[in-house]
Length: 320
Ligand code: NCD
View 1 (cartoon, rainbow, N blue to C red):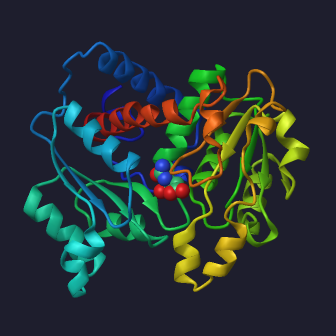
View 2 (view 1 turned 90 degrees about the horizontal axis):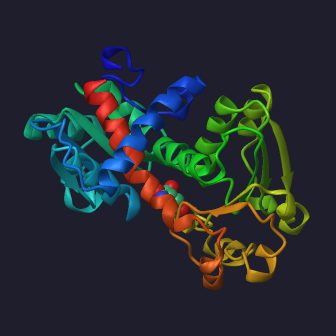
């Protein structure tokens, strides 16, 4: 696709940058090739000589390991720093713009991958970065690469990206993955429908519901999972985001809400035979471990999609 690739030399800040099905299909075609090569242990190093800097200001297992591995499998040098909030000069009061410019200078990075607790962190970073920035999770607002890997998982397992009833459960207020995924679903299918299941305290922000509706999506909200579980094609569980309750001094509320929805074996039995269960992980009690062996549980293979999609994305950004 070369330099006409829509991701080429662009920052990837928001899922709103994905505006057509073709964009997704092109990226997923690349991700499929990456999958094949990883599975066959094919050495493919188009990014030899390039450098990918990865800066994480929040905890991560999957996103961090898959981004750094994606870069290295493609042959790039990586400078991957975890615990930025604690161990970098940020703890001395350095601003994000200065850190971004410093990392660019010290590493010669060609792209900077950033996870940060501020909603607008990736936008700010992109403004000051001489090279593209990739959002690996920004505050409560966005997690665009997670949305792409989630959709890739759906496509791989259900064979379609339209005509889906996606039931999202848990923390719709603070969770960022569901926000990016819901928006992406409006782009790839006119007949996709989303149901948000959350306690009143953790309801989906009104602005997002309005935006989805404006884009023509059917959106439903409920507090009762049992009411909708049997019609789900995708059951997308999420954890209640403890860190934001801590920040707001509301830990009692967290304790009260954290296990409001638990996916039990009994509940899974009510699901369609060909539905799938997803979770961005980490899970902290909201999916019973016995569910793991159910054929519909896809939250472990879902993670692997992250490697393929992030490889595809890094290649698209750097080489087109
Ligand atoms: C998610 C995140 O960081 O937003 N994790 C992930 O990247 N897979 C979900 C979460 O932390 O609950």
